[in-house]
Structure formats: C-alpha cells, structure tokens
Length: 309
Ligand SMILES: C[S@@+](CC[C@H](N)C(=O)[O-])C[C@H]1O[C@@H](n2cnc3c(N)ncnc32)[C@H](O)[C@@H]1O
Image (tube, rainbow, N blue to C red; front, top):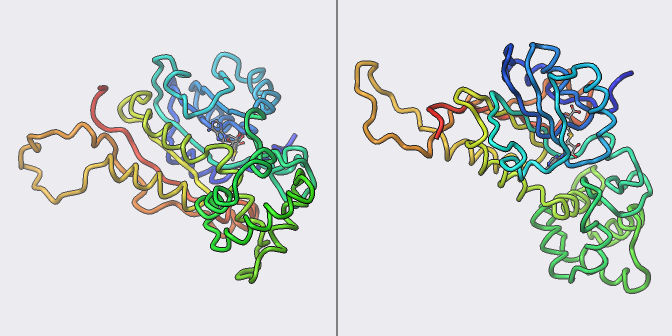
C-alpha cells in the first residue's frame, strides 16, 4: 500500500542523517512514518518516533509489526521531548514540521478550506479548537494572530468582518470562514486563495506551533549524543527563521586559524553545534513536480559537537 503522505526530502534526509548500525534515532513528527521507515530500511538501527496526533497509531502499528524491537512509537508533543525521553540520548533527530496530508485531507479535521468541515485544526485532537478561537477572541486579538502568524497585512479588516459575521450566526465551518475572509479583503495580491494566510495563522496559533518548536530546540542539547545530527524541515519563514537563528546562536563562527595555533582558551559551552547546511536545502524541480506540497519546504542540518554536559 502506498503511503497516504508523500515524505518531503526523503533522499536528503537519509543522506544527511547518515543512519548507522546499532545507533538510536528520533523521529519527532512520525505522520505516516515515511522518514522512520526509510531510516529503519537504511541501517540496522533503532528509531523512536513521536507524534501528537493520536490518529497516526495505525501507521505506527504497521511499522511495529515489521520492525519489532527496532521501533517504538509514543504519542506526545515534541515540546516535551526531555520528559518523554527519560534520560535517553539519540544519535540523530529529524523533525518534519507542519501538517500531514492525512490531516489536510480529512475534512472533519478542519485544516483545509478546500473541504467543508468543522473548524477544528487541532493536531492533537484535544484542547482549544479553531472554532473556539473564532467564537471567543476579541477583534484586536484576532487581528494580531492573523497578522503575526499569517503575515497578513489585511488582518484588521478580516478580524472586523469575522466579528460582524459571528454576531449574525456562529462561524463553525471551514468553508464559511473562508468565504468571510475572501469577502473582507479589499484587494488580492497573488493567485493564491486569499483565505490561505488566515487559515495558516489560526492553525499555528491554536497548535502553539512556534512555541513548541522553541521548547524543543531549548531541550535539544540534553537529548543528543556528541556527533548527532539535527535535521529540521520547515514550510514557512516563521519556523525557518527560528531554526536558522537557533543554529546560528549555538554554533561557533568560523574563524581563519592556523592548524598549529593552540585551541582557544575560553571554550564556550553555548556553542555546541556545527552548521552542516550553510544555506537551507531546497527541493529540486523534480521533487516539486512530483509533490507540489514540497515547494515551500526547506531543510536545515546541524551536528552536535563537543562532549556531554
Ligand atoms: C509533515 S507531517 C510528518 C510526515 C512524516 N515525516 C512522514 O514521512 O510521514 C507532520 C506531523 O508532525 C506532527 N506534529 C506537528 N507538531 C508536532 C508536535 N509539536 N509534537 C509532535 N508531533 C507534531 C503532526 O501531527 C503531523 O503528523
């Protein structure tokens, strides 16, 4: 059976992770298991996989049957990776941010305005939903979220129209929200649907996507073995700039130094990473042609240097 999710950068992930016999890897965003399966097929290693979405269990069960003691799945949020790891350390970690095709395709999940479903958008299927946000946020809060997480310059008039419309009738479906957003906009700058940025903003906000990424990065050093590689795939500039600055802030600037010069005396503990991909890795034209979703993807790679703290 083919995978319901077409994994982005699959070759680049394996090439850069360099899975090795007997080592232990962490896949923080299991989805349909595309990365996990490729890692397990490449070498006789162990993979621990994580996803906050309980509906991916069925894919994990299948891999469990095939790879048995080489694979373990836990449902959880990667923001809590330190607690979930319980002292374990890994020789490499992959993170494929954003939503899966399964989440987008199931209209009941409410991620896509192309399909009419309840306004939900919760990856973990629990907690505060998009409908809760639309029903309860003030006009100012809504405008701020749409601007901050959707980088939508027409956020104020969108928020104003949402508030006017919800007074007439509660907004509970994706298609109705998309229509309200389109109606509120004075002009269209591009060919993409005008509701795209607002939907992205609400999804990022209610799932706390940027906060989760920050917490994960903050815990990273504590769960990696020296030499472990960190591979992060992002789909929009807000995520990518968090990853880029984290890698930059924790890596040593390359300074031209003679090979005979002594090592610098003041070793800086905060610089525990080496950047492997100087520029983000972008999808090839072939990958974009085969998988349209990959067009906005970028992959950054770094490696842990130094010893265990
Ligand atoms: C793009 S898909 C991953 C697809 C996967 N690489 C594959 O090959 O099938 C992203 C997945 O990450 C999960 N996810 C997103 N944020 C998460 C978080 N903070 N903690 C755990 N899982 C998360 C989503 O539920 C979704 O299943």
